[in-house]
View 1 (cartoon, one colour):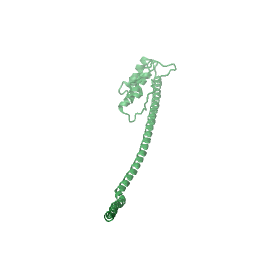
View 2 (cartoon, helix red, strand yellow):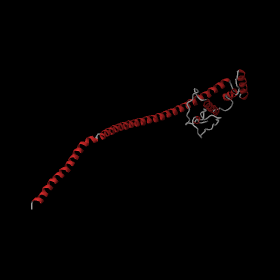
View 3 (tube, one colour):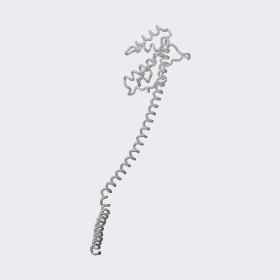
View 4 (spheres, helix red, strand yellow):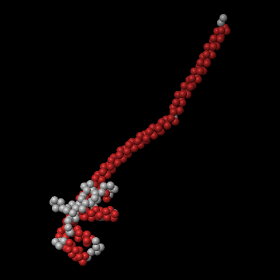
Length: 225
């Protein structure tokens, strides 16, 4: 039977349908189900291609549990081959069935129909459970990834906010230092001017002092023998 998973995910694995014409030791029949399959069956809003593919899987499943001899399944196939079967078609199909198995009765056909219907319900429920489990697993994985991303975003936002605060503080510091730089001349100019005045005075004082001393020296040379 075709793996349900391949209905959604392209896979090389295909589970071949094996027709079971004999019952097992307990007298029951089972669709060949792959335990790793996943499909949440619903006909609402399903793409037609997907729906047809799933229906084909069920039909193969029904075929795989066909009981030996002529039973409801063969009757069902005969009726299904007619586009719009009416009462006459059912009567003729039943007569043909009786010709193949004279022990067949309407009650037996109905009993067999209930068997096939119950098996479809069982398989549907199993596939539904498997599909829902898969959805739950995907949801859990999605939520984990979402939470991790939200945490990373929050962490990144905090780091960005911190960097913005640091940048703002740095811009304020740069602005303050530019203001200080623009006024640095006015801060040091008076001190520098005072010192330059004193240096000029120092040069002048030296010149005057030397001139006085030289004058005395020259007068000594001139006047004292």
